Length: 78
Image 1 (spheres, helix red, strand yellow):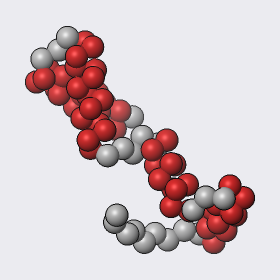
Image 2 (cartoon, rainbow, N blue to C red):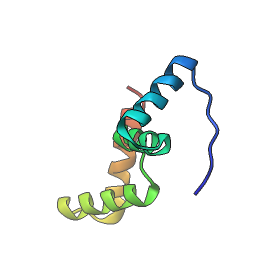
Image 3 (tube, helix red, strand yellow):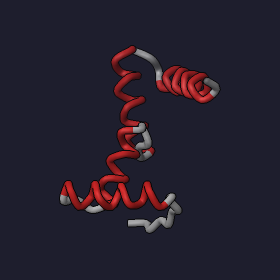
Image 4 (cartoon, one colour):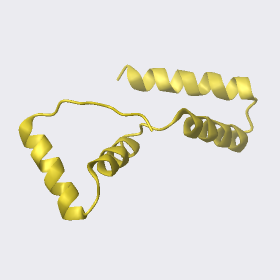
């Protein structure tokens, strides 16, 4: 597991610590869950999703990859 150091403002840090204590969960778990809910997923998960969509749509691997790249770029420019 990789370690990460981040800087939060004091109020947010306090709120995060309070939420962790209230929920009986470590801060790490809350942060990881938040990242997943925001769509930050491991590359392996993204590849599996593209493969599933490709099979469902009946696309060839290169067609699916091109479509995924096009859609990702379009979302990033919004």
